[in-house]
Every structure is written in structure tokens, then in C-alpha cells.
Length: 189
Ligand SMILES: NC(=O)c1ccc[n+]([C@@H]2O[C@H](COP(=O)([O-])OP(=O)(O)OC[C@H]3O[C@@H](n4cnc5c(N)ncnc54)[C@H](OP(=O)(O)O)[C@@H]3O)[C@@H](O)[C@H]2O)c1
Image 1 (cartoon, rainbow, N blue to C red):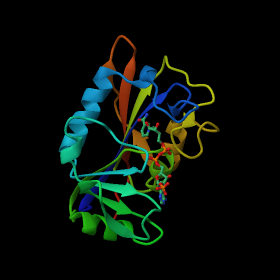
Image 2: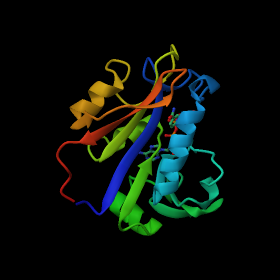
Image 3: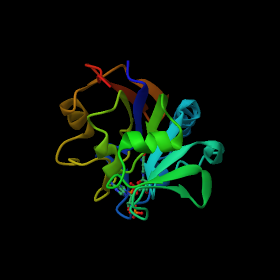
Image 4: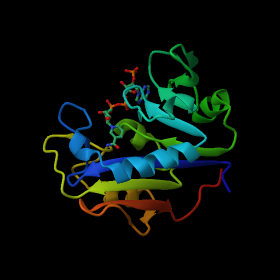
């Protein structure tokens, strides 16, 4: 069993967008049930990983250990604005080196975006939790991962060896669900 589990989390509109055309996550994509699910998942994670413009903004966020992708550092550096965060440039340090610097040899790593960061881990997720808001459309919006909207995110996850499990309802009134996409063949590392 891999020492590190990698899990992805995103909520997308019916057309596969994670933000609007201004690259902002609109209120129309925020649902209490999804926020509760997301918050609980991040409380269980050992490390949060995201790009420089993504941040979950929850009450426990300052306590969470995190890796922030950025090109402002050559490889790895402490984040001067957050003692729990490490800045990571993948051009200068491997993922293993970044996890080691963050003090995570084993445990669950939650990848929370944005799109390019989701794309980086497509072959490595143990589970990708895809929340969907089927009544929200964001025309001209910001696609949730590379390859969208030419293909829906479900097709991309399937093409990378993930299989859909049973969906859970997060908000019945708005028919918001989350589906775990799990790797059929586990990684060897
Ligand atoms: N709906 C959802 O569930 C969800 C999830 C996540 C994000 N979002 C939304 O998406 C938007 C943010 O997306 P984004 O694409 O702008 O942000 P992002 O991925 O959080 O940040 C992009 C920045 O991260 C750094 N980065 C990413 N990949 C890198 C790499 N391979 N090497 C070095 N640096 C790298 C770069 O920072 P530097 O410029 O410092 O080099 C880049 O400018 C926000 O509106 C957010 O709310 C929504």
C-alpha cells in the first residue's frame, strides 16, 4: 500500500468549470453541503497541496500543513507569510522532496487545485472526489482540469485509470452530489 494517499477535491458546474470567466469561484458554485464535506475531508488530511491562487478559506485553514506550488522559489522554501506552509517549484524539486520538506512521509495529501495542479496528479490520485452542481452553468468559465471542455472531467478521470463509485448527495434541493473516482489498480510506490 502506498505510504502516501493522494486525493483530489473539486466542485464543478454542469459544463465542467471550477470558476467563472474572471477565474473567480462564484457564489453560485458554493453549497453548504459541499463546503461541509470539503471541510471535514481537509480536517482529516495530513497535507494540503495547491497552486498559489487557490486557498480553501476555512476556520481550520491556518492550522493545516500545506505545500503551495509557485515559481517564486527555485525549488523549496518556507512561506514567509505562513509557518505551516512550504513553497514548492516542481521545476527544482520532486514531489517526494517536497513532501519530505513538509514533514509528510506517510499520510493523506489533499490536492485542491487549480486546474493545472489537478492535471499534474491525474496519474497519481488514489481517489478524486468530483462534486457536481448540475444546475449551474458557467459559459466561458475556467475549466476544472486540462482537456475540459473538449471532454467532460469524468472522461478524463476514466482515461487516467479512475473508476466512478457511488455518488453521495450533498445538497438535495440543488441536486449537488460528490462521486469518488477511485484507482482500479493501485500505484506501486
Ligand atoms: N471549484 C473548485 O472546487 C475550485 C478548486 C480550486 C480552485 N478553484 C478556483 O480556481 C481559481 C484559481 O485557479 P488558478 O489556476 O488561477 O490557480 P492556482 O493553480 O491555485 O494557482 C496558479 C499558480 O500556482 C503556481 N503554479 C501552478 N502550477 C505550477 C507549476 N507546475 N510550477 C510552478 N508554479 C505553479 C503558479 O504560481 P506563480 O505565479 O507564483 O508561479 C501559478 O500562477 C480560483 O478562482 C479558485 O477559487 C476552484
